[in-house]
Length: 207
Image (cartoon, rainbow, N blue to C red; front, top):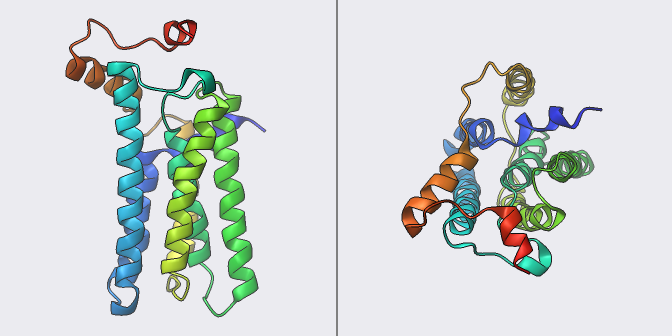
């Protein structure tokens, strides 16, 4: 298996719009409105914390050198905050065992996306674990808030079709490319007034 297949399903530019679309039918129902708003808020907060951690490192060199920890792994955060909830919502709330299995599949898939970040050399394990804790916390909260709710048909089928299409498009580089890491580096440099963004290798050597 090529770990590159696991990159698109953890990208914010794909997952955040998918979370919005997935939550729309639940937003229209009064009994599930607070739950989906809580999930969206958790996703937004986790995404913001990830961005802040990266900007702070590039601008001011923040982090824990002993753990090789500079930021949250964004793909890991997004994947674990989204997939367990999305897959669980595809199963009727009355099917308890099947719903738990769907959520477990989401946890496993999100975990594989996190593992891919370390395997591909994008993040050290410490940042993957930090991302898993943050994203997993959002999913745990959302599953509790939305435990009695499920997506009406045909939304589950649309989720699967859209996910496959996005993954294939991402691998073929047919989607617009935005270098978020470069933006974080440039933003951190500009805010801190440094001549250049903090370099990870130089930061490590300062132990």
